[in-house]
Amino acid sequence: MANTRQSAKRARQAEKRQDRNKTIRSSTRTSLRAAIESLKAKDLAQAKEAYMGAVKTLSKAASKGAIPKARAARKISRLTALVKKLLPATLGAEKAAKAPAKAAKAK
Image 1 (tube, rainbow, N blue to C red):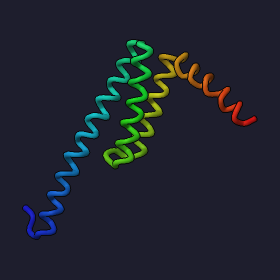
Image 2: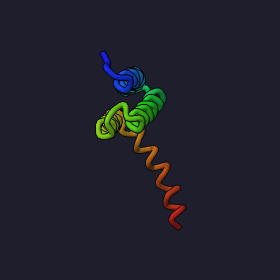
Image 3: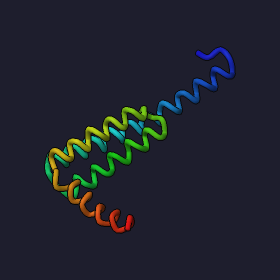
């Protein structure tokens, strides 16, 4: 139990923060799990959408401070490696499509 008004307020703030972070972390885990499942099912369209969603939620959770930035980067990196391993044509096609556009801008 808090002894002072300040410590009572800090306890209330901490509780709000915990609730907020809990929902953010939960949605992050859900999107990550959905991305991995769709990758393993090799459903190309759904896997691409789920991958982008997982990366977005991980980045957002890190920027909000719900998870450490290094953890988000590590999970994004491992998810990307899984995408390249299971669906190599997906990312290769995206990079190939972007490469000519970059080359045209350089000229």
